[in-house]
Amino acid sequence: MELNRIICGDVLEEMKRIPSNSIHLAITSPPYNVGKNYDNHNDKMNYKEYLDWLMNVWRETKRVLVSGGRFAMNIAPTGIKDFTPIHHDFTNQLREINMIFRTEIIWYKQTMLKRTAWGSFKSPANPHIVPSWEYILIFSKDKPGLQGDEKNADISKEEFMKFTDGVWYISPETQRNGHPAPFPEELIYRLIKFYSYKGNAVLDMFGGTGTVAVVSHKTGRNFIHIDISSEYCKTAQQRLDKIKNQHKINQYA
Ligand SMILES: C[S@@+](CC[C@H](N)C(=O)[O-])C[C@H]1O[C@@H](n2cnc3c(N)ncnc32)[C@H](O)[C@@H]1O
Image (spheres, rainbow, N blue to C red):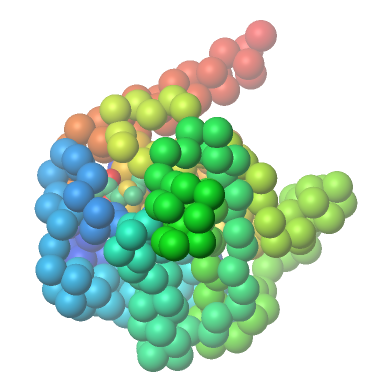
């Protein structure tokens, strides 16, 4: 499959075309099934149907990863009153297919100022914890180590030391580009630098408006971006074209 392309299509249909053992790092955030207003997806499926659908995506993800390849999944428990631990359910699914669960990074979003749901305010009757964080669950295929040429390890000492602290303070993305849940670039930058070598192939199978594609390009990695929405794919392509043009201008400046 040709790399560095924005592919507009259904995740399972398009993943079929990716050769086995060809991706070094998959990074994604699947739809959370909380009724978000996506362009072309029902985000309120029956929970069992939702889990079964994603189990097929995890199986495909394992197939396309190289041995030692990583899967970084951004997910958070949903619901405050009706707490739904989808992060546990996904972890169990991935362990069921023998992916190695390496760690969980806590993405602390620092959004507590905007809180509204207190439950029983100032009383132990039924107080609520507000989900001010999300997880990045990290899995490996077959073995923990990823082979690569050390001359393509491009993380600095300062970055390495900072990123090994498992709580990452990163504000949510403010430039939404018409999407309800885009990744902040900083989050993807850290995952790419920490878990892959320059020249590696990075996949986002629910790519949205293309943050993984854009940061892969900026950091000298190859990417495959898949999303079902032609609107989001158009935005992703525009973001990519913009940074490619900037790159050309800088080269000739
Ligand atoms: C949580 S969002 C990902 C956002 C992305 N991380 C970003 O930075 O823009 C989930 C994405 O999954 C896409 N999606 C939903 N169902 C899909 C399917 N069957 N195949 C491919 N993409 C799908 C949605 O269009 C949505 O953009």
